[in-house]
Picture: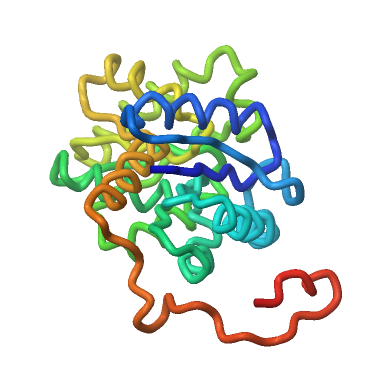
Length: 240
């Protein structure tokens, strides 16, 4: 199968980290690549960033459809453009927040999310409600996304915040609320003694499993192909 992981921001170094996490769990028969759009924000830390990342995501989905991609992962914890991507793709599309929250629900009675900036906590709560997950709290370490690789104290800060989250929320599991934290999961789990879910790895395995099962997004109603219509201006090329 051919699985494509889309980093919705334009930072190539983060795409490389995401690809490493996805490859670590991909099966031997899976061809996997990770890409990022050529247009959009350098990181996604606001509703504005998220909205402007979607055209780039949809461009990558459309390109994948011409290249025979079987399934996609959207590797941003806000799951930007997920519904629109499902309208375009023939195969499954899985968001990393969606996958991480569902995986965490299988591992304990409740989980907490440790994310980056405080301003993104509302989006995580919103997604937890949408997915019907037993999320007991969302906590921010206040490290910007593009600083995760540069801050020498990032692991210690995430571990300390995770310990507080587990205690205050009475949670059994932690979810890392940013694709840029993918490489921290194993170390945080070892430090805290609880399961720690990286959404990139979880989404990769979910997408792979759906293809193996021969399942794809239902096109019966809402996720059918968008009705054809003209788009104008800079969106002209998005006409379907």
